Image: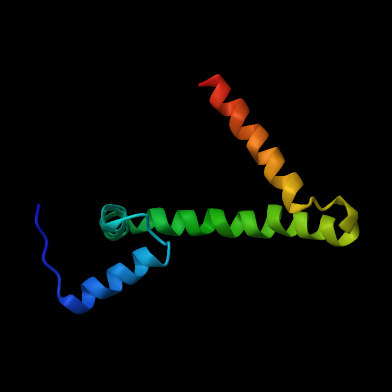
Length: 92
């Protein structure tokens, strides 16, 4: 399939990709088409994100405010993430 877009639109697409919102033009196009064809999915995802923000994120922030000493350093957090990634890779 070949699609031609005006230069101004191409520049906007390039800017979206450069901002990190999409990994490449293929991902941009597929997600844009999916959003157009299945708008309910975006609303459902937005609702799920909203729920996550209001429950898990707020609870985590409240726990931090109650006891800031529980906060991990950047080094500790990345060590844990590395350990989890290594364990997952070992299972594969």
